[in-house]
Image 1 (cartoon, rainbow, N blue to C red):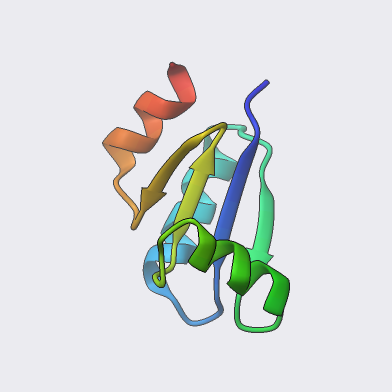
Image 2 (tube, rainbow, N blue to C red):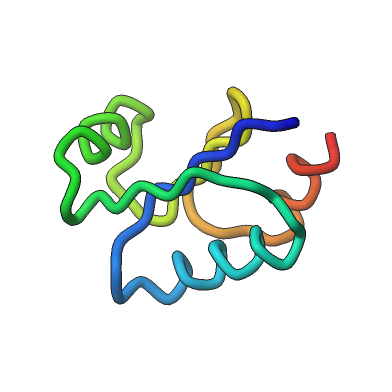
Length: 76
């Protein structure tokens, strides 16, 4: 099983789409709200991102929501 982390924040339409996509595909994931969790914000920045959504699938980091790429990462 893949380890998936979704760095997100409220009011972010691409974040909502990514969360919905992961749920539709039955992918268990850890949700981290960078607007309320300073540790999650530091982790996000350590990944080289300042944007949400940022999705980590095992060791692959995807900044932004690209459904085709995310599906490839889930099926790899």
